[in-house]
Amino acid sequence: MSQLSPCREGLFGILADAGKWSGPALAALGLLGAAIIALLPVQSIFRWWIFSSALTPERVLPLIGIGLALALVGFRYCIAALALFGGGIIVGFLAEDWLLSALEKIPQAANHQFVTGPICSVAVGFALMLPGARLRSWLLLFAAAVTGTLLAVAIKITDPNVDDIGIPLAGAVIGFWIIVAISLTTRAFRRDWFSIPARIFGSWLVAIGILYGGVSLAPKHNLLALPPVAATPNPVPMPDFDRLPSHLGRLRNRPVPEIPDVIPGGFQPQ
Figure (cartoon, helix red, strand yellow):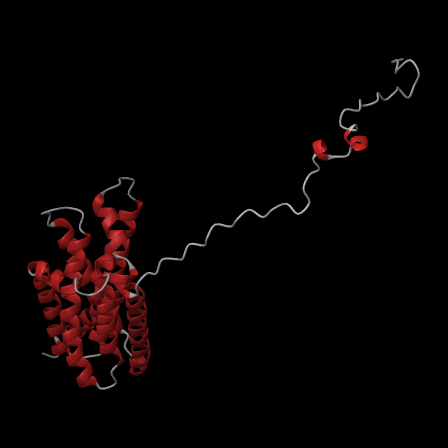
């Protein structure tokens, strides 16, 4: 047993190092894949959707917030939040029509992807802002379920293809990739003061969600059209030669005198 203990310690050390760097490796792998897709010369609907919907700040910021929150809670809450996030995605795909009919009651929601981004930002932001660990853990479960459900709704309403599983599957994979990569990276390098920047980030999410949602829901007023400007009369009218006195009216028919040459005989080139 004494001969096997150093081997076991070395194996556990390797596994610990691998687990510590699994988050950065997963993040680097995903970024490398996104860079390859961006540099491909071939234009496709899938490529357009990834960079115009899946990787926009409106979608990525709440997922980063969930990843940070998962690194600050216990292992059981972390697994439960991931399960609720996945379950929310399934519910969002299956109950898309019902969810859209409910979100459609929000004024001008249809013009802003049914405000799915602001709702997710506010829910995740409050989960990060709460100071109590237990209360934060319970609210994280709710925020994970809401974010997963609305992420599925956003994927469906931005999917240009019909009855194609490729883009919905890619959207779900990207969501899990962002959350897991951020969570593993933060948990591996976690310090006691990490909760302070996490709460600051949560307050930013709440502010962004409220501001963006408020601007989206605000009614757009049409600018009042200015009345046409009337042409101003000329204060100095041109003289009417027909109405001038007789001795001045003759100036109109007066012939223009010819200007004589300065040099007699005209200019002769040498």
